[in-house]
Image (tube, rainbow, N blue to C red):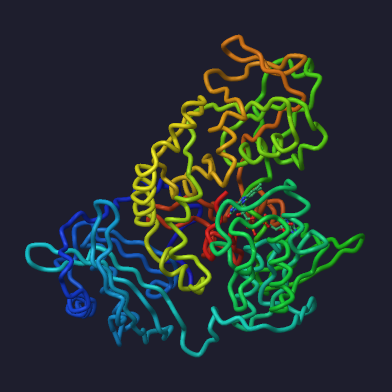
Length: 566
Ligand SMILES: Cc1cc2nc3c(=O)[nH]c(=O)nc-3n(C[C@H](O)[C@H](O)[C@H](O)COP(=O)(O)OP(=O)(O)OC[C@H]3O[C@@H](n4cnc5c(N)ncnc54)[C@H](O)[C@@H]3O)c2cc1C
């Protein structure tokens, strides 16, 4: 199953440019939600544009289109739904008992119900979905449809990963080789194992999890929650006794537990250097280096789970670098503050890494720490993230259910719902932001989390504790002028002022180009025909991740199982 007539690469369209709105209607509390949903659901068997609200959106996750697609407008949704229904023969439509409820997010309201159905076309399967309903002229109209493939008949259940042992094979043609044993590669391997495919992960580090304990800074911890980061399978990878914000050791221990418990096949200390596709055999030949030895594997599918960012650090250029007597490094090379204990530091940047690093400097008793902010930063308190996410991702809810609840929705709808929640939380605690402003740190209070993730990547500050260093004045903020030149002892700013520093850290981000890093492995010829990675296509679906990329090669990133924000 692949995408239908799509030519790669596809152009990027900002999430905010997709025609999505949340319904603003009155729905009384005393209606029989389930009766309404039961009355409307059969209309899907003969769907007409009149049954659909003007702002209708349908997102299909593999159930009826074989891939991830989103459709807009009554005419388009009705037309494609009817066509797909003809191909797939939808049957057994039933409202899930107890699922019907009125949802209210700020000014947005709709009646939502879950349902199940079967398909009996080329790929007979059981599926699930949700309907969003709104009243209109005395009738109920559908404004939201989601459809999700649950279980193709005759295949194992991808969500049922049982404890087991490794069966690592390197000879013959494997079904899949996965490059990278980070959270994405491991999660995918768990899925491959669950459905009985032959696979091997190839990981460059000696131990699974070293990317967190050795390659990133010492005190790194996730800003997103433990349960948001669970990998598929039971028992869960991160335990309830692990901290809410996992530290690097917790992550590595969880990864290793996962590999051991489920018997995930990983070749460690092995770096993939190239991969070539043999069109006649429809197989990849993957070359890797393990110590001094060359290893060759063959596979029908190749997945690059090599991390979506971090390859090329962005560092601004200031004049007279040669004058500066201190150290100037990018956050990518930052391990800890120990070499400069008690000294002076400047951190350029105001997003997550910057706030982590000012924390390390304060903990190392720096005599002065200055954070340089170029423009307003959207600040998301950890409590807001918890309010948005903890009801869905928690120890009681299996992550496959959580994913369906959150990620089954069209991305533009996810975006709007998150924006409503963020606005409500920010309005409830204005004093939190006022404290930042009082110290000169310019804040954006109402953020577009999905826009940040899909359109811009990063550029926000998830406050998991270090915000207090700014708010309480432990760290100075320089936001009224930008650095223009190095001096012998620090930096000179555009307003003529100087700040001294023994170490300057650039927390100024990375140029993220997964296609470019793919090029290093698969070569320019194959890379040219590939879909771009990340940002949305014209339907509001993610480009190049989790689906056909134009080759039997996939970029895999961890945003599906457990959205991973940084
Ligand atoms: C400082 C920092 C803090 C972050 N905080 C958060 C957070 O709070 N929440 C969050 O969700 N995300 C956070 N992130 C982002 C996080 O890195 C990603 O979300 C997550 O690690 C992506 O997982 P991944 O498996 O796609 O890639 P990675 O974790 O980067 O794993 C890629 C793996 O591929 C291996 N590899 C790469 N190339 C090869 C090769 N040629 N051969 C063999 N092996 C190879 C690497 O060694 C690595 O093990 C943070 C990132 C950084 C740098």
